[in-house]
Structure formats: C-alpha cells, structure tokens
Amino acid sequence: MPEKDQERLATDLGATVAQLMRHLRAASPQGELTPTQRSVISRIDTGGPATIAALARAELVRPQSMRLTVGALEERGILARSPHPTDGRQVVFALTDEGLRMLTAVRQAKQNWLAVAIANRLSTEEQQTLAAATVLIRRLMPE
Image (cartoon, rainbow, N blue to C red; front, side, top):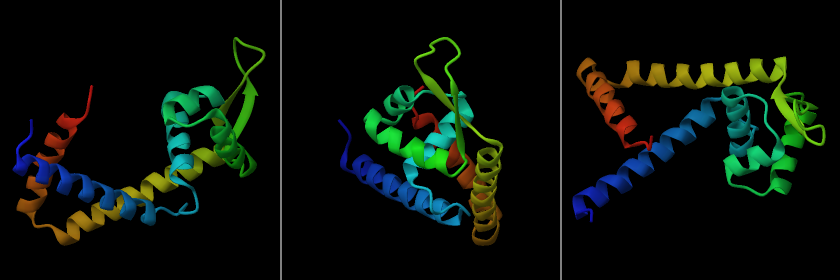
C-alpha cells in the first residue's frame, strides 16, 4: 500500500506527464489530428499494416469507432487499404508515403520543441537530473 508521499508523487508525476504530452501535441504541425488518429498512425508505423479489428483492440475502442478513425485517415491520404495477405475477407491499412512524411514531421517538431526547451530552460546539472529521472520513469513501465 503506497504511503501519502508516494501517492502525492504519483499524482504530481501523472499531471506533469499529461501536461508535457499536451505541449508536445501543440508543438506538432499536424495539430488537427485527434489523439486516437495519432496513436493509430504511430501504431501502424511501429507494428506494420493492421486490420480495423486489431487496431480497435489495441486502442481499446469499438470496431465501429475505429472504422471512423481509419476512414478519416484514409480520406486524407495518410492510410491506404490493401487485401489481407492471408484472409481474403479482410483488409489491412498501412501508411502511405504522405502518411510517413507527416509522421516524420510530427515527430521532428515534437523532438525539436522538447530539445529547445531542455536547452533553454534547464542548467547542465538539471539536464543530468532529467536524464536520471528519464531512466527511472522508464523503469515504471510494464515490460
């Protein structure tokens, strides 16, 4: 059972990470994408082409909701459909060249914003502390 100090730290850390994520999203040149759309694009980039059902399971949403998300991305030319390699009844969605360009631009903008903030707002010692904290935060993630 966590103690009060650990509960307070968990609350502060969660709020701070959420605020950082909002700033990173705002730094993105593709601010008009929803968080789910961004997540789907990133998931397909990392895991490869996927079906609506697989994406819905991964994102913890209903397939009907995922159809809307994927449809919007397909309409914008970010995703393209193709036949499933082993099941002719299904289709898979993959990033288009435009989708890859957009994803690269989004990631670069976020990284640039954060790197500039670190360089301009933190001393060398604070940057070292942040590096150590990053290792600790990574250890909190489930394996």
